[in-house]
Length: 195
Image (cartoon, rainbow, N blue to C red; front, side):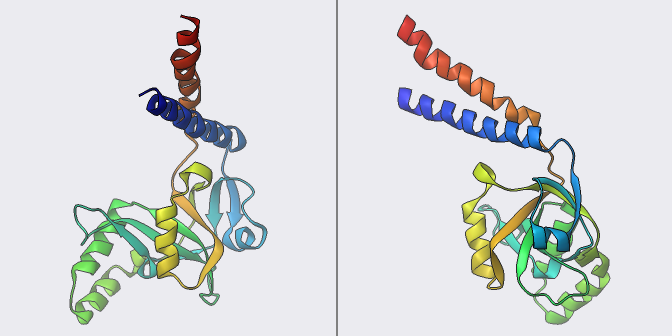
């Protein structure tokens, strides 16, 4: 039992430590074009990326275990406008309800003509040119299972590809897990040892 409590406290410390680092090093989002990000890398984790196009039709999607016929998460490739779609360097991770509804309606259609009709009706949502903002995943928040799925479905994927969590911001609530974890470790070990 003590071992599991220790692992829980350690998890709080690690997650809280990463969140605290993210907060302290990302006080405001940095504006960067997609071509700049691809050539020079991200200057920090909280970014607003401009001058990009999103092709939702190229998305890799994740379903829930309860309903494998509906997407719950979209990983949308970002492309530099008016350039060939070559290697994918970064995905936008979106859980936007409106976009998911349009995408799932398209998935449900079996006839190719109906799919094309649906695409034409929602072309502005499925083919976008806009800015996006959020946090680039790193460290403990990187989901290896999702990364493996993306590698499996995208042969033109860069080895060091990035994932941007749409509209995510630095979170001080998560950072509070660090002092909480340290306090629990103190209660678990040092206070008991003294008693």
